[in-house]
Image (cartoon, rainbow, N blue to C red; front, side, top):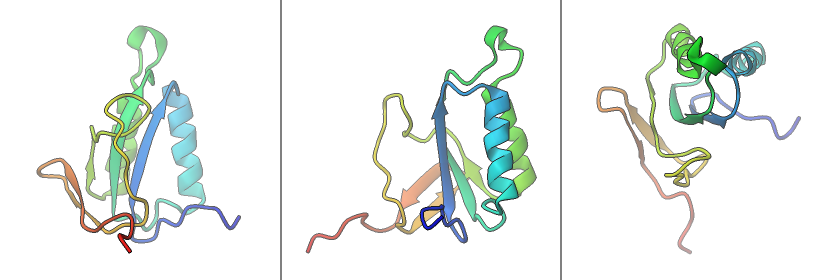
Amino acid sequence: TPWEIQTRGAILLLEDVGERPYRLDRMLHQLRLAGKLDAVTGVGLGAFSDCDEPGGTLRGAEVLDDWLASLAVPWVEGLPFGHAPPNLPWPLGARAELDPARATLHIAERGVSTR
């Protein structure tokens, strides 16, 4: 569709709430099969609240770790966005720099014009 995400050269930001690990895995498979993970330059993870299996048999973070290892791109986790506080706004389409050594994502330009 004309609204599909464009990921070529992008840092993909992901977060979710209440999705069990098998659903996270399914959604990431869908992105991969659609070719949306082929050309990302990095991944930033926000909050994944309540995304573990009941009883703690599998955590959502384990699924995400496996996926990120297979992508072979830099990534950071624990960024302040998602459904739980802090939920800071992130400008989509703005240039950004990902630093996995410092676990930071720096927005390099304004997300809105001041004109």
